[in-house]
Amino acid sequence: MNIPLSWYLILAASLFCVGLFGVLSRKNAIAILLGIELMLNAVNINLVAFWRYLDPIQMAGQVFAVIVFAVAAAEVAVGLALIISVYRRRNTVVADDIDLMKW
Amino acid sequence: MTVERIIFIAAGVLILGSALMVVTTRKLIQAALWLVSALFGVTILYAMLQANFLAVVQVVVYIGAIAVLFIFAVMLTRKEMRDNSTQTRSNWWFSALLGGLILSGLVFMILGEPQFSRLAESIPPGLDTLRNLGTALVSPGAYVLPFEVSSILLLGALIGAVYIASRKEEDK
Image (cartoon, rainbow over the protein chains, first blue to last red):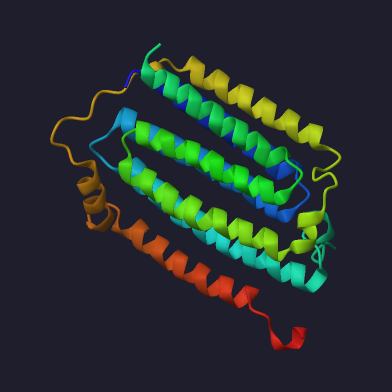
């Protein structure tokens, strides 16, 4: 294990920013969710890297990575259900067109 | 340059290249498939960090369930799949600027912290991290509460997703 911790952190930061770019620049609501998945994965890389480099005896990093998995699964299930429901009613998945709650 | 660093750089190139394809490719179904590739690269990182259980969970949950769910959603919104026009907003350069600024700030902070240049110590022999993880998830002194909360969250998401996506009578 002769990789510095900062390599993992920089890779995770780059992945997070790519995901952020996807979330902010995409029109399609499904593509926005894809960007959010990339950001959640970047967070998980950080959690596991800190667990391995700082404290492999205590399992805090891995436990919270598992919880991020569960949250990501729940978020994708509800998010895609919402998108499919909106698509059925309004026949669009473009985030700009879904402005029903805009005053 | 050791073998580990070469594997790390290869995995990093795979992850970042696939992630860039996810956010830039025009066809949504291809974006979902590039996401599978990026998730696989993250699995390599977990294996290198000796988080074996998480590597398996990454393949089973992320690639096996979440990516397939995305592909299903893309296919259910079929009109968009044939759409070959541009998929990015007109002010995408502002998002790129924001992402670049945040990335440069993060890299500046990471490189400025001397503690982050440390190397990992080897895991002490006889330490069973998988057993420790299982114990930590169910012992009252550790993380049983977040574990139960996440199970309730999954149940709520299951019921909520079924309710939201089910076709109601008045829609017909």
